Image (cartoon, rainbow, N blue to C red; front, side, top):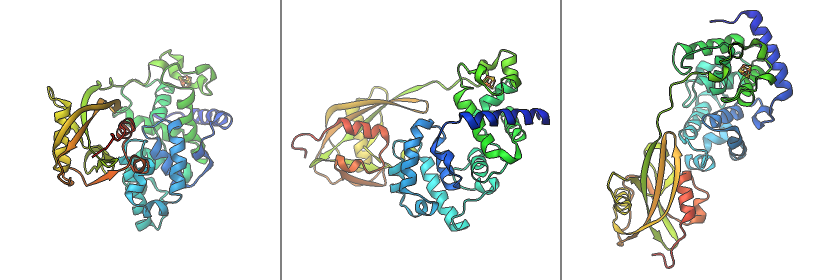
Length: 362
Ligand code: SF4
C-alpha cells in the first residue's frame, strides 16, 4: 500500500505544523551530532524518555565523543550505564564506537546500510541516525510509529510480523517529506508518545484526525492488533552474601544477561530446594568455597522482561578457603562505598543496600 502523494503532502504538513508548536523539549532534540543521537536512540530502546534523560546527560558528560567512548574500558562504560538495564546495548555501543574509530576514522556513517553493519544497530537505529543527524529520508518505525500508522490507515493484523511489519516501513518511507525527514520522523514518534497513546488516544487534539481512517471507522483504540504478551513466569533466586572485614564478595559475570557486571554469587532455586542450600551451591560454583548458611537476611522482587523474580540474600560464613573465580570472570571483596562506582545490576544493588555488614564481620 502506498499513500496517494496528495495525502502524504497533507499529512506531512499538518503533522509538522503541530510538531513545531507542541514538541517536548528533550536534550537530544537540540543537537544534530550523530554520536549524541546514536546514544539517545540506543538508550530509548525499551526505556521511557523520563528515565533516559539523566542517563543520557551523564553518559555524554563521561564520554562526550565517539573517540572518548572507544578509548574507555568496558567496566567504565557499564558503570555509567548501570541502572538503565539491557546491558547488551551498552556493550554493543562500546564495541561499535571502537569500530567507527578504527574503520571510519571516528566519523559515524550517514548511510543506513553501513550503519547496520555496526553491533547493536538495527533498521530503527540506523534510520534514526541517518535522518535525525544527517537529514536523509530514511524511515524509522518504533512502537509509537507502528501505532500511529496502524490507526491512520486502519490496518489489521500483527504489526510485528510480515507482511504488515514490512508494509509499515514502506508507509513510513512514503510519507516522509524529503526536505524535512528529521522533524517528520521526530513528529511521528512524538504524536504516538503524547496524543496517539495506546489507551485513550486524544483524537480531538490530533493534527491528522481528519485523515485518520481508524478514527473514522471507530476502531482506533483497538489498533494495533498484536499477539497476546507472553505470560509472566515467577522465578526464585538465592544469592550468597559473604563478608570479610566490612567487604562483601562479588563476582564479575562472564555469561548471560549481566556479562561484565559485578554480582553476588547466585543461582535459581529449583522446586523443593531450600534457599540457603541454593546459596551455598551458588557460592561453591562461583568461587569454589563452601560454608555455613545463616539464613535469609533480605529479599527483593523485580521484573525482567517476562520474569518476575524473587531474589533472596543468604549470609554464608566461609571456612577459610580463598575464593577463586570459577563461574565468573573475576572476584573482588568490595566495600559498599566502592559498589557505588561499579557496574552492578539494579536488583543486586538494591539487595546490597538492604544488607549491612554484620558486627565483627569475618
Ligand atoms: S486521530 Fe486519534 S487514532 Fe488517529 S492518529 Fe490521531 S490520535 Fe491517533
